[in-house]
Length: 184
Image 1 (spheres, rainbow, N blue to C red):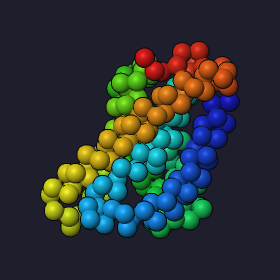
Image 2 (tube, rainbow, N blue to C red):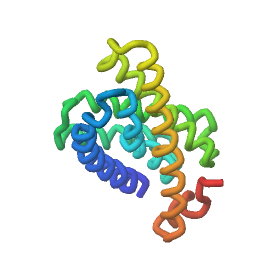
Image 3 (cartoon, one colour):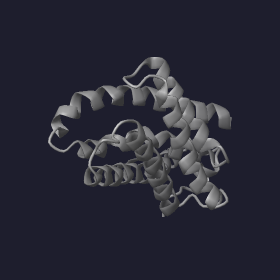
Image 4 (tube, helix red, strand yellow):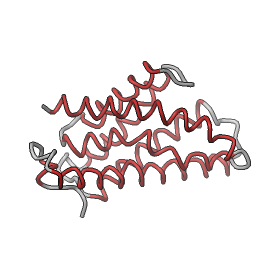
């Protein structure tokens, strides 16, 4: 059942990624004066890994859900091609390391927030290498800060509260997350 639920989270995430890609492209002009601010939207791309880990609560769940979501996004088509799969790998490993640091025993809000932030740092690092290397240092710093904050809030806090809301409905009852929500 774990793999099925993780796969549903991942495929749903991949479809959301594809839609978010379209929104990202259409909103770029709004951030033309200060492009690093565009990263305020970034956290959505990092949510499946954190959400998957919070629901499944097993080693590898964050990596699996984020990586499969990126594969779905690549299959649906996007402006970045298959490079999104490398991003999915990095964005899945980063929160996985945070949950591993807590021995896969703490699913509380601070850990979720840190997992989201770690995914953001991984994504921002790749972006600076592949896309924004020519930016001046203050823009790079601002970009990393905005991506990390967006990831912490959307992927970290948002996923924790989504798990809590889903647990209240009873749909997560077969999982530990359905009996002990992560937010506190």
